[in-house]
Amino acid sequence: MKLKSFPSLPRLNRISHLNPNPFMATQTLHLLPQTLPTDGENSNDDFLCSSEITNSPSEPPVAPLGSPNGYLTGEARIERAWAHWNMLGRPKLIVAPMVDNSELPFRLLCRKYGADAAYTPMLHSRMFSENEKYRSQEFTTCKEDRPLFVQFCANNPDLLLEAARRVEAYCDYVDINFGCPQRIARRGNYGAFLMDKLPVVKSLVEKLATNLNVPVSCKIRIFPNLQDTINYAKMLEEAGCALLAVHGRTRDEKDGKKFRANWKVIKAVREAVRIPVLGNGNIRHIDDVRKCMEETGVEGVLSAEPLLENPALFAGYRTAEWAVGDEETCKDGKLDQAQLVVDYLKLCEKYPVPWRMIRSHVHKMLGEWFRIHPDVRDDLNKQHTLTFEFLYGIVDRLRELGVRIPLFVKDESDNRASGKETLG
Image 1 (cartoon, rainbow, N blue to C red):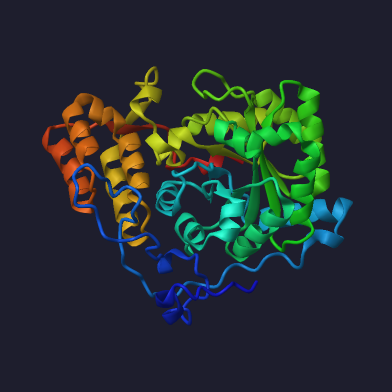
Image 2: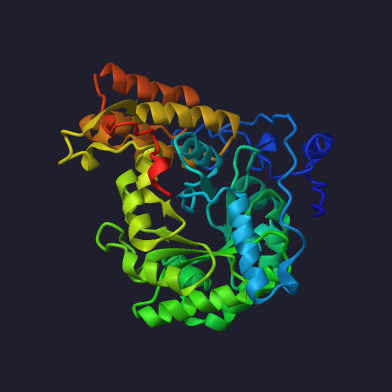
């Protein structure tokens, strides 16, 4: 894949001989004005957290399996889908796509604590195709960030293909979002609202499947009617989808705490198609992982919101909420969310992201701690111009106040952190 040059970014051109990929995190650039606000009422949340450029070269991307899929049909396409999945090691524990939350430092944090693979946040295909600032800030990766799904929302096959071609050499799947249920997706005519426009869905998948070297995956929600969901999944498979992630909730079931994901439908989809299937929904701790895989037969699982509070979920750690009732078997895992925040901040120093993402993650990970000391949370909210020194100071202050809420692990014999031995 030949990447377009960036004539408006001379600093990038000077280091292009080290790394031809302008999206690699080792070449993260400041694409927004870097004059920080001086007015206390203004915020630096949309600024990147560092202006440094690291010139270290990256390793070349993993070569995709052969040439584009266009000539493949039927059995050959199914065999190729499984060959690729097997080549990646059949990852089971996967970070779901989350807007403004599954960015590179957070993906790496989750990988450190057990995640086998991860999705990028949903990227807008039109903006990604047309806007250099959007591309450079919203998609960064590095050699440790594999296997990787790069997810796009789209309703135009040509724009989607243009966006996908820019990233296909740096990921293991290009994923199409058919599951976003939010109002913005309705207004933009993408995500789960394309479930009413199945010919458009089919055209998007076929466009990528016949023109990319990297496989195409799809993330969907279920229909209220089981047979409609099965027909939907089969259509995607026939169109060229090589991997299907099924969120076991309908488009209207937006509240994950109010509506339980329907694993029976996920199982039915897995039994109806021949490509690898992943399950999404109700994955709150490692026991849920085992239970979901046993009950549905899926290849792996995705988790989203629970990972934001506890990025060590896939390593077998659970919050106090999920240790209740298991006090005899759960013990202090010698890890807490304050340490996870420190780990995350160190990754952000290496791989810069906008401060708004960092602020969001600190709130999510330290939410229970802030409930004990809301004054510390209030000070964070009032701090319009964030710095790493200030955020490390928040952690130190909570510790000095005597706050510690441990993450727990089950005291099982020979139970490694992630317990992958029992996941098949």
